[in-house]
Structures are given as structure tokens and as C-alpha cells.
Length: 302
Image (cartoon, rainbow, N blue to C red; front, side, top):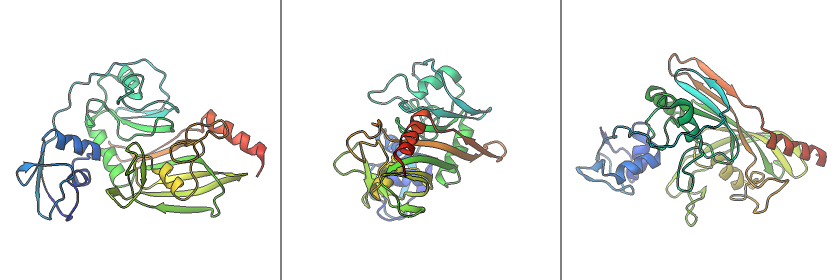
């Protein structure tokens, strides 16, 4: 495929992620590292700064045979048809295999339950995975059963027409009843495992929030994502001084109210169906860990 750079100074990997065939930034970097991307006829580098009119050519290899050990596990399937399945992921379950987590991931469970009935667009380690949620975030995750459905859902993520709504408990009392955090997110300059609000090598990120209830020292909120950056809600709420309860990475370093990981749940997922465009709206109730915290807060008073 041939593309032409249209923004001066844009990084090659960012350009591919923005303009390519539903590529994530990491997928674009993998293509570049594998020598499948050229810039003006020469091998490209992920941090190449482009000039307007640069000719970018790339190819996407055929999906490899997946070499993941299927693992029997209880999957909470809240919606399923011939194209899409929506999973209610529990807190603590890693979505796909990676360094340190080769087995017992959601993908291992999907491979056992669905075998070859998963899309191959995201590569051999992420069959069917259209978008992710963090290990310690609970809630809804859409999985594509075929490449057609995957492309359709990925396009909705890209143009922000897939709606994802989360509930969270944050530290402190938000003064306003609602608001928006519009702040770009990129990799932390010194800790590569973290993200941060930064203008450097970042991407636009927008989170809308509203208060559900206020308690003594904490606030129960609802967040709607306009974009879907890594750790977005966690980074944005910490940025405005209200980190998520239990988030020892971006918030307080010690567990609070028995929570040593973020109190964050993806409770609503809305998208247009790949086959006929009909709206699909799926809900997942608050899990037990979340309701237990709410009970503690109610006993503490307002």
C-alpha cells in the first residue's frame, strides 16, 4: 500500500497509526522493525520525521498461525453473534500474552472457547482483540470473530463512534458536577511503563466525567471516553488531582479501603453492528469489589 505524508514533522509510526489500515501505534512500529515500511524507497525508522509528500509504502503480512495454548476458563459472555462477542472481564485477568504473562490470559480462554473463530488482524498474540482494558480494570471488552468485523469495529474506535462508559471511585471531592479533561497523553519520559500528560510524542486524549455520588474524601464518577489512549482515565484523573482509588501507579502509593489496584469498571459498550449497522448496547453491572467499596463509603458518611 502507498500513502503520502501530509503533516510536516510527524513521526513515521504515528503517521501509519493515523493513516494506515486500522493499525495501532505498536503494530505500526512492528511493521517498521520488520522492514515492511519504506520512506521514499528506503527502509523507514519509527522515529523518522516526515516531510509533506514523502512516499510511504508498506505491506501487512498474512496472519501467522496462532501458537497460544488454549486454556479452559469461565468467560462471562454478555453478548455474542456470528461476528462479535462481548466479554465482561474480571479484575486481575490479563487480556493478551506478553512478557511475564504467557498463559492464563483472556486470549488463552478465547482460544479454548472459540478456536479459529477469531480475527487475525492484530497478529498472533492478540487474535480477536479490537481494544484492551488494563489487567486490574474490570468490564466490557469487544472481540471480533472475523477480519471483517474487526475492521468495522476498529474504524468505530478510530472515529470515536464506539461509546465506552466507565465508573470509577476517585480520591477527593470534585467541586463541579461534570467536566472534561482534554490533555494529550504520551509515554512517561523516565518510567517507560507509565503514561503521562505531555506535549512530547503524545496523542490527543479526551475524557468526559460526571459525578454520581460524593462521599467523605471520595467521589463516585462516570467517565465517557472520546479517545482510547493507554491508561487514559487513570492518567487524566490523576492529572486533575483526583487519582482513582487504589491506583498505586498514578495515585497514592499505599492501598486504601482495601484496594491495591484501581477501582475502575467498564460498564457500558455501544457500537454499530458490522453486518447491518444496527446499534448494539451492552451493560455489565458493578462487580462485587466495587460495590463493597461503595458500602464502606456509605458507612463513612457524606
